[in-house]
Image (cartoon, rainbow, N blue to C red; front, top):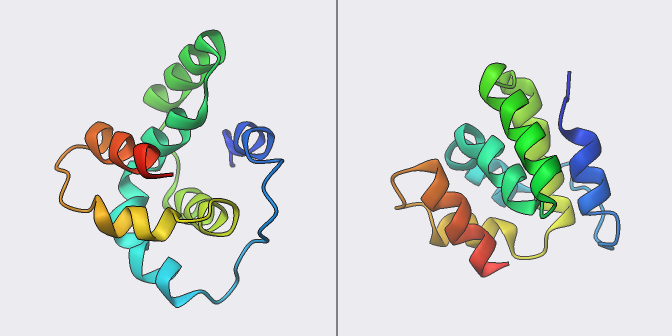
Length: 106
């Protein structure tokens, strides 16, 4: 179940690029981004109350791998420069630092 998908859809509703289905760069960056998808999603939530609620949910129940892979693919399609940012930030050792780096490049 994509418990945070509605949040992402709301956050990214104004972006114009469509979701890729066969993007090799998206697939290439999946392994690096997937373990940090919760942090990447949280980085997009600006409302403190919503962020706290979502973070609590994410910490209590980690998302299944299929869900995080699907979210990565949505980010690839909805966030211009996302895959380049994943590559540029790949040396970051924690998910928090990785997400902050990516968010700073988008």
